[in-house]
Image 1 (cartoon, helix red, strand yellow):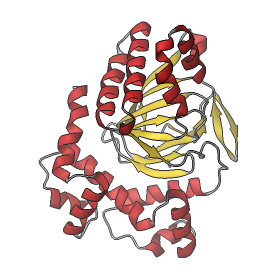
Image 2: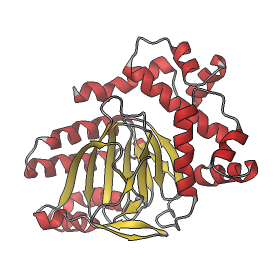
Image 3: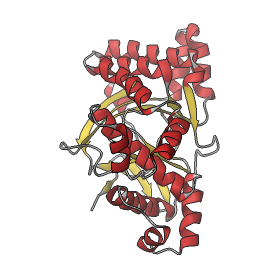
Image 4: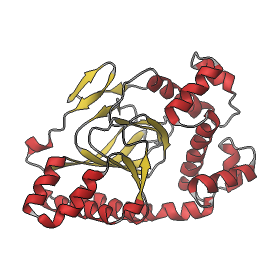
Length: 310
């Protein structure tokens, strides 16, 4: 059974997301950079903190919870998070391969740091104003994602002063390319009441990860969650904004992309069948609609960050 842990620096309430206290300022730093590579079992419960955050998922995929929005996330995705936004990443048990270790790069910084920087360096004011105007989470895409990948990788082996330079390169580039930011959820999703839907969605993800290759009937999954079919459909729709079929297809597409990225010699049609898609023309239309490109074009695009890292 998977475990959902809480950091020792989290203030918890059974009905609310945990408040995480970040202590980087006591270490003589103006922001925090982390390169996480830990066992997939070490998942952190849903939480929030006043700091802004940039999170790049290098290894692993599963379900992302941001505010009241539940969505599948893919390996390689990058998210900007405003302050005080409840969030967590629930990893698919199969998503980290033989190592069983998830990997991510994270930057966290406070609004106060940004505002103080403006006092000393007024040239930064447009950048800071843009960042503080963002009231919801965003996927970072396009050229911004490529640039941020490069800067985060450089931070790992840099000293504190160079890390600060890399950080401002990241923030400046993002502020100059707002079209690369794709919204997640709604701006008002900065606080919300926790309820049983979070645990139900975790159970749903576990079930799908075991049975995605098979035909999954609504009655079977509803029974697994101890819900009527109508209640199950309503729960999924409220949590994700999607029907169960759309949610399942999202999972299968993410699995397809992960497997194709790991072995580009596989035949696309055979891999689609292995991921639960029995109708290949439907799969091709769905992939183009969701990803905005064909599978072959997607793999070429996804190589960019991999080549940057290597």
